[in-house]
Structures are given as structure tokens and as C-alpha cells.
Image (tube, rainbow, N blue to C red; front, top):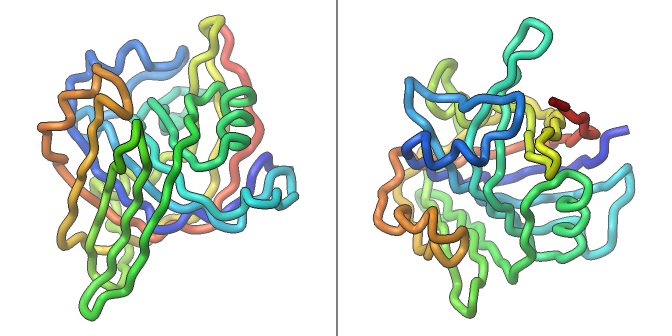
Amino acid sequence: MSFLKAEWRKLAIANFEIDKKILQEHVPYGTELDLWKNKCYLSLVGFMFVNTKVLGVKVPYHTNFEEVNLRFYVKRFDKGEWKRGVVFIKEIVPRIAISCVANVLYNENYQALKMCHRWEELEKGRLVEYQWKKNGQWQTFKIISEKESAEINANSETEFITEHYWGYSKRKNGSSNEYEVTHPKWRHYEVLDYSIEIDFKKTYGAVFEFLNSKEPCSVMLAEGSEISVEGKTIISK
């Protein structure tokens, strides 16, 4: 049985090209940075968990909720093939219980904050917005896109960002956790406009303060789908 099943919907994604050296200390054992055309990407991602079940059970008040994460991309060569995955700098959710379970079982850096979202169909487009409250101030990531979705082109930047099917995290003893995330290939919406009103230092620490004055190299909106998160395995030294 999968550890978690849910839907991930309306994934707003802003990608920043950054220096690889910034991420080296966060790269889990057994993996290496996964680059797009020799560019190292760090992504801000906001989305909704919908119809969430843990070990097949819906937990009251923990079924539908927002998440915003800051993540980067790695790969691991295993049994003759490359596994492409993500590593999270931090994941923000609105429920303390979710953050506690994820931190303990998967060694992820979850934080519980007040959050909200807004989805609207406009006359000629679609609005998707995610917010979280940090130290008394609302942080906002908003996208306006085309109303209708389209297939993601093969070998495109959007495919690279969305087609990572493994999660990795560092353990205190120097080993790593590995877990599989399954979902079909997603569709996406063409982004028309966006705004990022975030104090990255306040949310993610001084190391990422430079993002306050850095424009993303690309912004995307993916529809998402049903997903599953499988049980973890440990990569030992």
C-alpha cells in the first residue's frame, strides 16, 4: 500500500538559475545535481493537496490543504539507469500534524504556517494564487494563465521540471532517504503574467536572500493529477 495518495492540483512554479555551489551542502548522499542544459535550477512551487489519504485513510481536517516548497533537482544512477528526483529546502503546509509526520518519517524540512489560496476563472484566463504568513506578513505567489491547458512538449524545460519521480533527503547519520512519487504526465497552462511578493530571507534564511532581487528565468503552471508517495528506502554509505 502506498504511504500517501492524493491529487496535486494547479502547481505554480517559478524557476531560478543559481550557482551550483549554493546547493552542494544540501545534496543527499548517493545523488548529484540534475541540470537543465548545464543550468542549475531552484524552484518555488505552490499547489493544493486534494483528497489526501495516508495509508488509505482520510484524516479529518487534513484532506485538502495548500503546500509551498522550495526545491532543487538531483539524479541517482541505480541498477543501470538514472533516477531523476527532487530535494526540498523547505516545505510549508498549514497543518502541524502534517509537518510533524513528514519531518519524522521522511526527514523533510516541513514548517506549519497559516496559508490560503485563490483559484479563479477569468473572462480570458485563469488566476492561481498561494499565500503564507511568516512573522506577521503575508507572502504571495500569483500566476495568471491561459484558461485552457495543453500537452507538455517532449524534451522541453517544462517537461524537465515536472518529470522528476523520486524524492531524496539527507539523514543525520550521513545516509539518504529515497522514495518514489508516481503520477501520469501532466498538462500545463501558458503563463501570461505573474507576481512574486516574497521575503525569501524571512521564509528560507539568509542563504536565499539573493532571490529577493532575482527574476525567475521561467514561470509555469501545471494542472497536476492523482499522485502516490511510496514508502522510503535508505541509501547507506
